[in-house]
Image 1 (tube, one colour):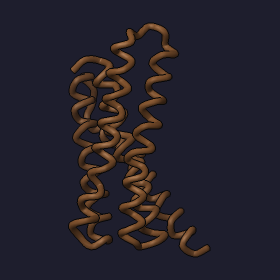
Image 2 (cartoon, rainbow, N blue to C red; image 1 turned 45 degrees about the horizontal axis):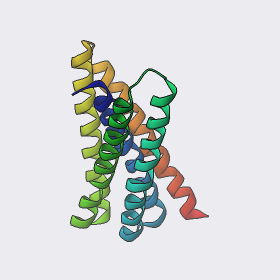
Image 3 (cartoon, helix red, strand yellow; image 1 turned 30 degrees about the horizontal axis):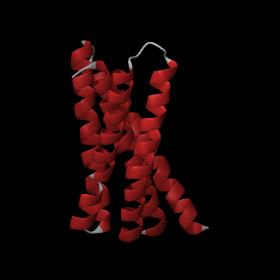
Amino acid sequence: MNHSIKKGFSFGLTSGIITTLGLLVGLYSSTNSAKVVIGGVLVIALADALSDALGVHISEESENHHSEREIWEATISTFVAKFVFAGMFIVPVLLFSLTTAVVFSIVFGLFLIALFSCYLAKIQGINKRGVVTEHLLIAILVVVATYYIGVWVEKL
């Protein structure tokens, strides 16, 4: 995998999982509505994927040392990865009760973050435990914070 595609994929995967988990948990704790959660995930899968792809595109252009092809590879791989990894969280909501779907999504999302973190540590030749711990702690912080934001919003 070339550098531009790897950059877009890793950004899209990470952002897609963490952002969508945050939204999913926040909407769940504030509404307890599967329809609202599905709608939110669909909206974030498309809007945030396009937004992040444009952000990566502009960021790559601003570095002033990437070819047009590299810029578009990073842009497209960001969009595709973000859209796919965000969108996949609709499946558990369609298959299970909302509470089960949220728990499953959190566990599955954290597993994917840990798995990708192990891959990153391996290719960089650094300690897996440190990388996985760092990335999981950030993801868990997002999930916990958005849960309590949702609880707070529900009480308003």
